[in-house]
Image 1 (tube, rainbow, N blue to C red):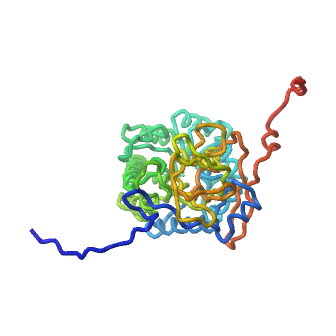
Image 2 (cartoon, helix red, strand yellow):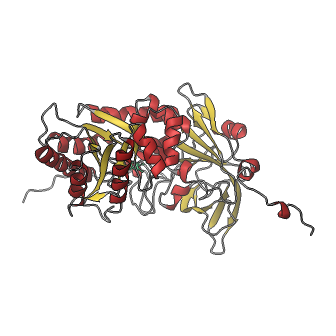
Image 3 (spheres, rainbow, N blue to C red):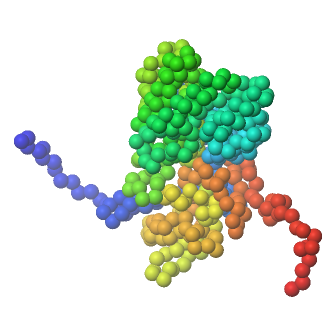
Length: 452
Ligand SMILES: *Cc1c(COP(=O)(O)O)cnc(C)c1O
């Protein structure tokens, strides 16, 4: 046996806050500015809580993702996933970067059209498309991704009536080694459902099967799963070529790449566990390049990446309402934002930074939101320096889903500000008011008056 090499012992100073046997590193650099704008000033100008989006991070993320795919594959197209964040200013940043639109409802479809996305550059996903919405999508030449047989038959019928050939793809679900499997959307690969749907489309020729689609899951940490999914879609494309002598125009790998957030219960920080765009791109493009297409036949590769492009571009600024001691002695800090605006705190441990200078002393605390409701816990346990009433904090990596899944519950939804490439802030969504909520309510005449 080889003798281990001697290493001289070293004495290293333990800094408080660095990961040691007592626990995780505490965040001890305050975040006083976002893209050159003082947090205090943003809050005094636009209110608290406040969502802030960094346009420069959005564009940088998009460029990184494009580079990762385009250096490995000749034909790449991104389509912005509206449900991840459908604020129109946000969508238009992605459209300016060349992204098409990817929508999962009639409302999102209309929003994409209104933003100026040409109909034939909108991908229409999701299980719920009404007849009216489908007619519109067929007329506009949008890419309709069929989710189930009822939809397939409805489109066939409409194609007959409208004497227009719909451009369709099928959504395929499959076993990629990730469980539980997402088999509720689309047609299953292993059981033969997907091949059956393909036959039903191509043997009764009144629509164009332009693509094959999969969206295997969300917050995926395994690039290999995408490699498997791409191989299975390519296998279907090869089957189509063999039986029908037709080439598929595109393969759409959906979204789901993990963002840099930290999942609850995860030991390591999201920063350390999230694969890079290069790793996802490598897995996907290798599968497609090895599938047996000739150079001319290589399908367009579409990606519907959402969260990984926007999560770290979003911040939530908030203010301390109060501190108190719980009956077991723990410190509790009440913030002016809760699960109503930070929906993703149900599954992430967001990084939270104080926005002003503080002492090195830290204490574990429970972070509560302002709602009069027991479930309103932003963090069960977070190590923070003691924060005083009116101190501010910055919550990181909140750009994905919070601004679409937020609830108008007890409190009004906050404003959104985008900081542009020159570090200038723009209000891109107004704070809700009583009037904005009331504008949807109607009062029957006989209930207008009361005496108490
Ligand atoms: C939600 C969704 C996406 C985007 O997913 P992310 O996890 O945000 O990347 C893409 N495609 C489809 C069909 C979706 O439902």
